[in-house]
Image 1 (tube, rainbow, N blue to C red):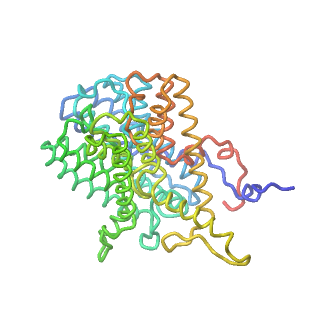
Image 2 (cartoon, rainbow, N blue to C red; image 1 turned 180 degrees about the vertical axis):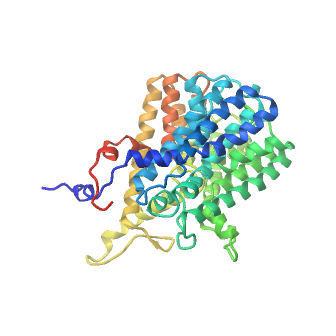
Image 3 (tube, helix red, strand yellow; image 1 turned 90 degrees about the vertical axis):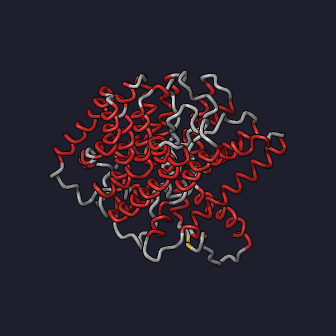
Amino acid sequence: MQSAGNGADTLMQRARPGALALVMAKHGALAALLFGPPLIWALAEGQMDLAVALCAPILLGLMVWLSTWRQPLPDDLRGVEAMASIALLFLLAALLSIPAFMVLGLGPASALFEGMSAITTTGLSVAPDPDSWPFAAHVLRSWMQWCGGLAMATAVLALVLGPGPAARTIGKAGIDDRNRIQSARSQARELLGAYALLTIGFAVAIALAVQDGPEGFVLALSAISTGGFAPRSDSLGSYTTFAQGVVILACLAGAVSLLAFTQTLRRNGTPIWRSDSVRRVGLATLACAGALAAVMAVTDTTDTYVPTLLNLISALTTAGYATGSMPVTPALLAVFILAMVVGGDRGSTAGGLKLSRLGITARATRHALTLPRLPERAISPLRYQGATIKDTFLVALLGLIILYTLSVGAVWMILLSLGFPALPALFDTVSALSTVGLSTGVISPDLPTSAQLVLAFAMWLGRLEFIAVIVLFLPGTWMGRLSTKG
């Protein structure tokens, strides 16, 4: 009997190494975007060692780009190649940042961890003394987070892929309104425009709140990208409550779908407060506030409610800024873990499973409970917010949830095998896979090299939402049969 998967297998396309190599070569110019601004800041500060370490990947990237810039991309660039290129782009960005972080005093594994944490907008750090770094180093980390949040992915769409099936494949990460935004290039321009405006607006607001222009700038870069790196080793702990609140508000804006902002910016656009994404993020924030109040009332710890709430909102947005130490009671840690699993909304820079996806999951569960009561011949498609949910989307959603759960279990088991306590290890595992950046102390400068590499891989998995990375390691991606349809 023919297996159920064989029908799909006959249509599968493998990635062509030559085409993928050409796509990656055309990414080379993006090295200047990623490392150029930190290089300028390092030169202004007279940090020549750091400047040289940042200049090297820029020159390498430009040389590779110039060697191929006249070569056109294949007209039939495949979805699997587009997906693989994005995964490799994030990996190469982390690898190219290693020399700069080694100049700052980190070993190779720690430098890779720091670079991966930056480009994946995670914010976890193993740096022993970041307060001693030149300010250019903080610009480097925050700028990498800003690029990793969305700018890099949309730059790939605009500069390399252009419109077409492959671009639409990547566009599924957060660009769904294809009737209004006709091409990948226009998608990239609109999203980058909204992203830049949000960053500039909050950079001014945060700078006024912290009374320091450069600090406000790097905090805004990390907040809008829900990255969480701060120029101080205590994160937000030494800022005023007002300044902390402004930064967390920027994180909430980053957790809203950028498509909502692009629609608002259009002529006769929808007001941002009427956006479904804003509503989802707002309701999730209120739910977190209520759950936290209930747990803290039971545990008699309400005296620290405000700073703990700011930390919890930071966890929900997956920004990872901290106003103080993480709670130690199991009940509070459980609330934080759930918030990190949920994350922000789909189409935002946040990590986690995403609010809209979990909303569809809840609706699918409710739908399943109604099916037994329907007549045998009744047709009752699953709908969410007026739209019919396709079976292919549900399959992909189920796969994502399963991969997320299996990844949490695998990384958690590794940390347990290294002797870390169970609940803190679970907390930091979820923090890495949801690209949050909060830690209970498991992730520290003393973290074993093996754990650093595992968690760096976890951050890469989480930022690319698992499938794009896993596809790279599947033999069928490279050795599968060729489809007769291109």
